[in-house]
Amino acid sequence: MTIAYPSSKTYRYIFAGGGMSALSLVYFLSQSKRAHEPMLIIDPSNKTVNDKIWCYWSDKPEVFDSLAQKSWKNLWFHGPTGKSIAVDIAPFQYHKIRSIDWYTYIKKELSQFPNIEFLQAEVSEIKIEEETTQVKTSLGDFHATDKVFDSYSAFPCEIDNPLHLKQHFLGWEIECHFPIFKAEAVHLFDFRVAQGKESEFMYILPTSSTKALFEYTFFSAQVRDASFYRDKIKSYLQAFYGLGEEDYLIKEEEKGIIPMCLDPRDSQMVSEKILRIGTSGAYVKASTGYSFLRTQRINQALVKELEKEHSQAYVLPQNAFKTWLDNVFIQVLLEQSIAGSEVFESLFQKNTGSKMLRFLDEKTSFWEDLSLMTTVPSLPFIRAVYHLINRSK
Image (cartoon, rainbow, N blue to C red; front, top):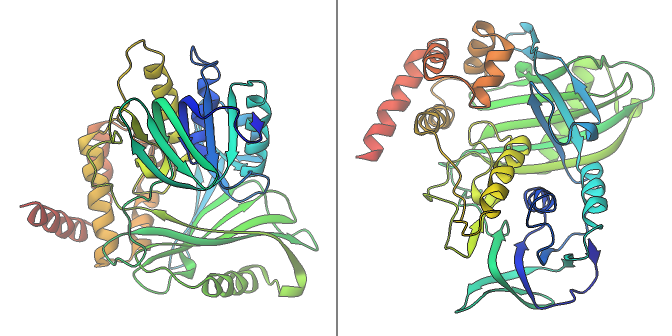
């Protein structure tokens, strides 16, 4: 991948935005019949820092498993009343990848292709012309003869909108001065921190006896100031591990806001020449915020479509019933007629870990979905369904 000013103004494919979704799509293209087509990736960042942590689970080998910093076969769930559940997720494993490790690997792989170029610039506009699609940037205008893959456009989820659910979080990767962590399991949800009806929890990824990621997370509409999350992490470390600020070093901090509202657009295809990908294209599963493995699977399917001589723009397939379940779950969390912690506690108490992960990955059957829905408190979900039906009239 050439990191310099582009050698041309015209490419077959242009990627407006060069994050995980775009780079993984280019990676799969580089292994396809389209490997030697001219491609340009435009992004303001050169991807040289660890700006994100990506996690996923799978019951079979996946493309980027070798890049995982750590993998686990067990999870912990901690309920709001203090009850803890050890969750065996076999045959699944839960994987953690540092973005810098992934970026470094992808850039090395793509550097073997002189036809794949990178421009460090801001995208300002994407405009369809008669013969090409123009991508305007802070360093000039470029043209795609086939398609622009757009991960630059904002997803229609408003930060201040009380009807738009978000996963918002701040995390610290810390190194303790002495061994204290048990690294054999992930703490997926710790609701012992929950104070109200918002879905509020700590997420913990211990990678050794002295190192762990602590991420204070909400599934809610209201985003807080960064100092709020930091204070919560400090209090948690003191309360549950007896750690004062002098006992550890903060090695890295990450924060983010992930849309959990469903995209009102019917498809990712803006036109035959522009296709939204990544968060812009609703690659994130609305009810969980997970996107890494989902992105790889969608992009692999997209590449198969692009390999065809007369390919159509790929549209993200939607299972109508699964989408409806996501809608209902999101409505329950928004209405807060029941604490989110109680919903998750019911699910983890009454279902196996493997069934839960298959459900979250949309791999369960219709009948398994119905069975699982009988394990949640019924009244809040019936109320949510009623409100959704009334809203659609």
